[in-house]
Image 1 (tube, rainbow, N blue to C red):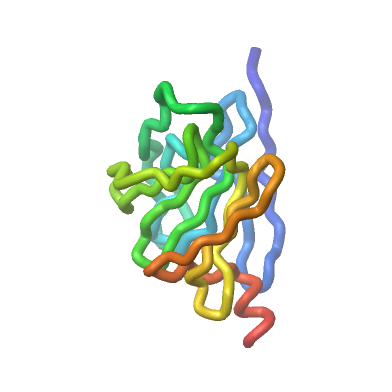
Image 2 (cartoon, rainbow, N blue to C red; image 1 turned 135 degrees about the vertical axis):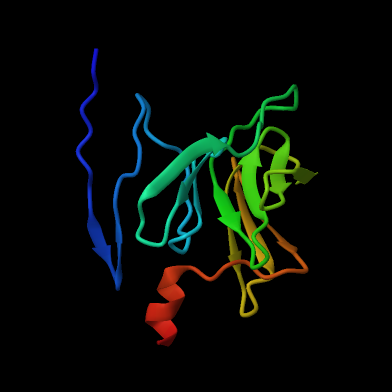
Length: 152
């Protein structure tokens, strides 16, 4: 059975969003990245794009399988050095830009989403099943595009 997917474009400020790939599943979390960079899709996959936004290749970014406590790849953010923070089994998984797993931030319950915030973007807000947790990090997160609209 073939699944038809229609590319979708939506104007957001001065940028746009469009579908790069679709393979029988709705992609999981995606990140806003500069053209000529990499887009994470369903987290374990990465799509390299050129400066015009054309897809160059699709590849495995990281393997988040394991025997950890409950959780799944979902919420995902990037810090200013390119490290990727993603909810997953056992907490927030942290990866280097090349996909190397450098650690897991353990929480008392399953995390489902996260965001960098505070005036300096060095507070990590983590939404869990019943609570919201905050912790300070050394490197600020990448600013959300909305910040440009609010401050520009």
